[in-house]
Each structure stands twice: as C-alpha cells, then as structure tokens.
Amino acid sequence: MDRNCIPILAYHIVNFKVQRFNHVAAESRSRTPVITEMGSESPQRIGEVDVSKWKKFDSRRFGITRSMIPEYASTVLAILRHEGFDAYLVGGCVRDLLLKRTPKDFDVITTANLQKVKSQFRRAQIVGRRFPICLVWIKGSVVEVSSFKTAEEIAEEAKEIALPPNPSGSSEKDFIRWRDSMRRDFTVNSLFLDPFMHKIYDYSDGLRDLKSLTLRTLIPAQSSFTEDCARILRGLRIAARLGLKLSEDTKDAIRSLSSTIKCLPQDRIMMEINYMLSYGAAEPSLHLLWRFRLLEILLPLQAAYLDQLDGVSSYSSSMLMKLFSNMDKWVSCGEPSKSILWIGLLAFHQALVRRPQDAIVVQAFGSILHFGWKEGVEYARNKANHGVHFVPEILGSSSNYEVAKLADKVSNLAALVNKSVTTLSDSKSLTKSMSAYSLSSCSYLVFVPKKAVNDVQRIFEVLDSRNNEESSCRKSLSKTRSLLGKIILETMSGTDHVGVESIEVERREHGKVAVNKQSDGVALFDSTAAEEHSRPKKLHRDAVADLSMTPRVPTEQGLRKRTALELWGYHGIAEKSRASWRKKSVVLGKEAQKERTAKIQKSIFGNKGNGPVDRIEVVGKAKEPND
Image (cartoon, rainbow, N blue to C red; front, side):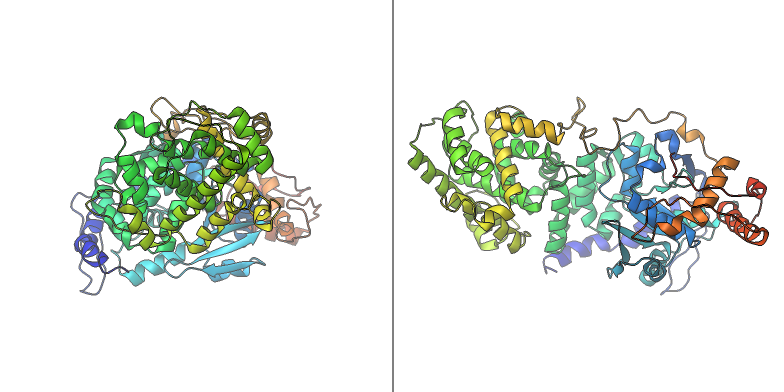
C-alpha cells in the first residue's frame, strides 16, 4: 500500500464502527435500542430489528420464470437443494432480471459450507482469502458459490457489531438472509431469488430503489466506502450500465473519498475499470468518472483532455466520447470485449491528441485495421469523409495522398499509437506526457499490466509491416483488430453507421442494435439477438402488497412434477454424459414411497409435515419444466 494512503484512510476510519453501529441501530424497531457492552474486545449488540421492512414477492409478477435461469446455474441450485441445503441466486443477477437485462453472471449463495459445496461437484475450487468463495465449473460455465456461514465467520473474526438474535415471529431462514443482505454494498444488490419457489426476498427496500432507479448503499455511504473504497468504482459502474441515479449521500461520499481509490492494488483497479469499459457502458462510465473527478486519478491524460473542452456540448461531441459510444454498440454483458480493445482506443486517441492527422490518414488507419492493407487503402482513398471535424485530433485540411505516401503516414501513426499506449503502464512515460498540461496535481497512477500493453502493440504491428499481412500476430488478434478499425470508421463517418456495405451486412447478421435511451439519458436495455428478455413493462404497481412471509402452497400437479424432478431427475444433471433433465419412469414400493414423500414434505414445508403432498401416491415420468 502506498504510504500516502495511510493518512487518507486514517481520517476516514476513526469513527467507522460508530457510524456503522448507528445505521444498524436505526433499523431497530425501537427508537432507543438497548445497547449492551460485551467487553472491550467484544462486539456491541443492538436491540430488536424492524421486520416490517422484510418483504417477499412472487417473481412471476415481474416476468421472472425458471426458464430465464441458464442451465448451468439451475444445475448448481438443484444439486445443492437435492442435498438438503437452501440455495438462492443473489446480487446483480436478480437485479438485472428485474430490469429485463441479461446478467453478466449468476452468483449463488447457500447454507452449505464451502467444503461441502466443493464435494458436490466434479470441478470446484475454493478461492479467496478475504472472502472465500467456491468456483464451480459446470456445463462450460463458471458459477461463484458463496456461503452464509462464511459471512458469519468473517464477521466474528472482524469483531463487527453483533446483530440481534432472531426476532420473534420471523423464521430462522429469513433472519439468515437478512444478516447477509446487510453486509452487501447496495440495496439493489441485496435481493435473493429462489427460482424453484418463485420468490424474491427483499430486506432493505431494494425493489423500491430499483423502481425509482436509485443507487443507495445499505449503510451510510461514508461508512460503506471507507470499509471498501472499491465500492466507489463498482457503484459508478452499476449506475452507468443501468442508468441509475445516485442518492445524495452516495454522491457526497464519492466526492469526499475519491482519493482513497489510489490505495487499491493495481490489479483490482484494472479489474474494476475493465468491468466499466468492456460490457457496453464505457461512454457513460467515463462520463461519471470525469464528473466525480475520478478520471484525473485513473486516466489523467484523458481527464486533462476533457477539462479543456468548452461546455457539455463539446464533451458529448468530442472524439474520445464518440469512440467509446460507438464501441458500446458492439459489446454487451452477453458479449464483452477484451480489455485490449478499450486500451487500444485510449492509445489511438491520445496519439491523435499529441499529433493531429489528416482525416484521410485516420480513415485509412481504421480501414486497414478492418479490411487489411489493400482493401483498406482503396476504401480510404475512394470513400473518405473529408467533412469530419474533431478538434484538436483532425487537421482542418485533408490531402489526397499517393498510395505509398499514405502508407507511410499510416505506419507513422501506428508507431505513435504504440508509443502512447505505454503511458497506461509506465509512470515515467505518463509523467512526460502530462508535462504538456498545466495541472496542479496528478497521481501518476498506472494500472494496465504490461502484457496487455504488449498485446495492444501487436495489434498495430501489421500497420508497420505491410508485407507480413498473414503473420501470426495478425491472426491471433484479428477479431479485436477488425472491431477496432470498425469503431474508428464509424467515428470518422460522422454518423452512427459506417457507409460500408460489408460492415452494414455484418451488423445485420450480428443482430446488434444501439442501446435505447430515454430522453434523460438513462440507458434502458440492449436490443440484441443474444438478449433473453424483451423491453420491460413498468414494475407491477401492486407488487409491494404481497408482504406475506408464508410459503405459497403448491398445487398437486406442481408437487407431482417437483417430486419426480427433485428426487430422481437431478441425478442426471451432475453426470456429464447424460442430458440435463432426464425423463425417468419410477415405480415406488410402499416403504420407498413413504420415505421419499417425507423428504419432499420436509423440503417444502420444513418440519411441519403438512400439505397436499400427503395425497401423492404414484409418481409418473418426470417432465422438463416449462414454467
């Protein structure tokens, strides 16, 4: 950790535990909760919890059904449930499903400990020191599985404020879920989904904040960001991708604690920035980073460039923002880009800022990246748009060069781009480049790994070696190189679409459509061929009316299906060589029937042993669920 970070963090951590305690106490039913001292080395305990905020909703009222859960996530949930553990989808995937977006990933939380989780799957590994999770490789995907017990153990070791015992009138399961939700970052990420029982559990008004498109921390924002300053970047990323507005205390905390992100490890910063820029929300993410003065810490060259623009209109029409806006049209959570794409765009733009070029040179640069040398040069000479005006990147006049001279210009620009990319990984190079700007202070923070820089430089090597068009470096990075050229061409065209027939055909085949936006600039939903969900309707007005915590009694038909699936059908899921939902005829003897019926009773109704499942006599073939 940087020594300069110590006084910054010390100031904000002094009263951190007191602030967290005051917030949790505010959740208490009593306005003056009873506080008991447990000793100088023991956590504090607060009074009762206000269970009136605990809500449960039917997920189908929001259009969420089990068919929306990918097979790999359903498999993990099903296996854990079959072993007698509770398992839920949690966090961002529930949030995105409610907003009709394709989740980036599906995270699972369970009552099983991590060792037990690991033993249930053929390929699983426990990773992480601060907060261990179990990575499960299944059906070609990876599922992150966390445990309620892990969170409890970490809280005890950290000697956090002790949460009160289970309030009277509430179930133990509700209390476990509530305790876990209170340790999360934002209310919209604290929702739990049980896709088998079609239930969404909300203990912190997360659904209300989703309905109002508000991003709010679970505890006071000042305390939350002091606890983990990476939440600042994560919060801005969520707000940018989903078009959420920040609550006032969240805004104030970001402004006052922005400098603490310098204390994060470089790989953590790289991970958070990559999440921001590679998943279809790069342009709004950069805007929020600039607005809250975080860009001058993370990307000072780009911040200095934007600061010199004249007004908001110049900002929105700047070449930097146009480049990333066009990139957002080609990537999404379902199809993210590699980090070298946005790194290459930053380096390309910085090269133009340092040494402006004629429009035909820039268009040739992009067309060669996309088409190759021969077709690229021909396209640039025949269809170049000479009316493009970006200041200071593009020169006012544009000349018609001979092929050889144009090729030399393109190669020189490629060399300049490769030199510019080093400012993202080398502090000395960044310091030298920043000398061109009159800034009072600069963190000179670099976080891009050298391997990524080398890969970006390999993208542009083809522009330095026209006779080596089929080199291995071109083949290995061909997709990223082609997309990079396509983005540059779209930006230089001055419109949303490039006037290149082949590109338009590829867009139609790809099925990608630009992000729809409301008049206030709030991004709604990507309309892509890969999207699983349609544009959302308004959240159900009467959804908050369902406050009952009593399980819905399943129908007899539904129980017959669940009986077959839960007792026998899931065995086929864990076997790699078999189909995921295997149909199986089952003939039960009286004793076996009685034993299995008791298991189903316990899984559905707990230990009460009541319900319509008692009427089941014979179980037929298990059918693939279609709800």
